[in-house]
Amino acid sequence: MSTGVSRRRFLGLSTAVAAGAASSFLTGCGSSTAGKGEAASAKVKLPTYVPFTGVKPDLPPNAKGLSAGFLSYPKELVQSVAKVPGDGSKVSMLTEIWVQPPLPKGSNAHWRQVSSKLGVDLSAILGTDPGYEEKFPAIVAGGDLPDLMWIPPNQGLQHIAQLLDSKMADITEYVSGDAVKDYPNLANMTPAHWKTAVVGGRIWGAPSPYPALGQVYGGNPKIWAKADGFSAKSTEEFMDKCKEVTGGNTWALEPIYGNAVSVLSQCYGAPNKWGRDKSGKVTFWMESEQYLEALNFVVKLKKAGVFYPGDPKMADAYLKLAQGRIGACVYANPTGARKDTRTNDPALAAEVLIPFDADGAKANAHYHAFGTIGYTAIKKGSEKRVRMMLEILNYLAAPYGTKEREFLEFGAEGSDFTYDDKGFPQRTKKGKQEVEGLWSGLATATTAPFALAPSVFPGSHGVQDVKDMYGVEQELLRTAVQNATIGHYSDAYTEHYGRLSTEANDLVNDIVAGRRKISEWKPFWTEWGPKGLDKMKQEFQKSLEAGEA
Image 1 (cartoon, rainbow, N blue to C red):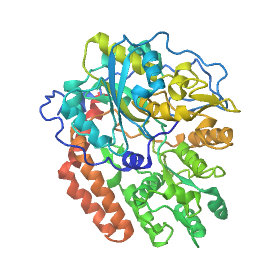
Image 2 (image 1 turned 180 degrees about the vertical axis):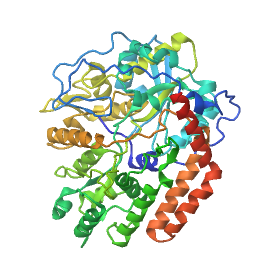
Image 3 (image 1 turned 90 degrees about the vertical axis):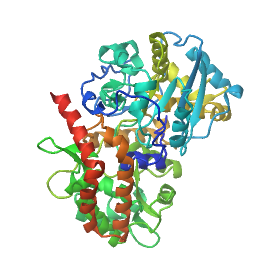
Image 4 (image 1 turned 30 degrees about the vertical axis):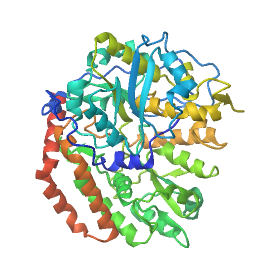
């Protein structure tokens, strides 16, 4: 199992949608969705949530985003798919991988076995990170679309509504409400997972679940032991601890200033990207007073000299944390923090900073993540063809502890994997060459909701890591807030947000570095209002109010 997304990509997902991608790749595609999607998205009935009960975890999940926790590998795997889903035809897929590519299909026995289990001749275009944001529009422009296409929310892909409306299958009637029960593994996904696949009032694909909890500071416990641990009850205490651990060849924080403001804005109660004030009016987090207070605090941290003196885009911050050069880095989620520190040093168990109350008003809140890294849409076709694609996606979404999941993730016992002394599957050399890369792509297309298990964490402390991270998730969920606009659509957002977020984060870096003044922050937002921000808020407002009517 993996939390999957690279550091470069999660920075894009959580703080700025990556600008780029050809803005005109859908030239010539007609669309009845463009311009009216924001009102329609509020009306769709999401799929019914039916948790999978075939395997009982040691620590139960919930619909709010708490991960299932397993302290050992299930002794008896269960079958979750009753019959082969395919009809023997050719099926093509576009998806992204986060590891080395697998051996090509022609020389990959596992790939052939996957095709056999699915009952189709599966071919896959495996995009890489970086590169997917260029590959996707190029394939669309070519006209011959794959049967299954993974669509991420964070890579600057524009005019997605038009693509969906003109080329992809509307699967609403097949999965909305109780209809999803025809696909039990897809029904195992929560409403929060499905919301990211809603555009223009219709459901367009199977979600790609990801840990529901968002960005956190993860700290090297050896460094923070000097300051009685990586926790704080106020900004003053946090500042004091950062100063205390900074010295010699060690600095408290990595120099990625935008992420520092993002995580610390939780302590001030800023909205989770898009929020609503007491009157119900849509607000954007970066123009809020709370975000400005967090930015001011990060400027003070910078002046105090607690940031590592490196490039705000540095790629080796996690390694420097393990080496004792940096005390804390921002990670995509709590599990990612613990997993990465174990990877770089098996003796390191990252401590997660719980958002503290910055101003005494008890406004601190953790930001829920999207809960997915996208969704996989199905090319238009007959009802029979579309339903077969849903059966294939249902197979790929097999939960932890099922025979299908073990096969997809690890391949065949003996040749592709063996069980270790604790009973967990471990890939052989052949498995790494044939299975690992293909599994990365298939799991990106769709997979089961994330589960905590000892094998997630390198080293010999996996059981304790599961218990620790389950406890951290419970603590974060007590104050967690959602992005108010998930499941709602804005045409202006797809048009303007990439440039807005890039410019805003550039300004954050310049202000914290001292190249520009913090007095320039509010005027920046005044200028951006008529350039697209006001339109985004208006469209989200319309969609939210339509859903309440």
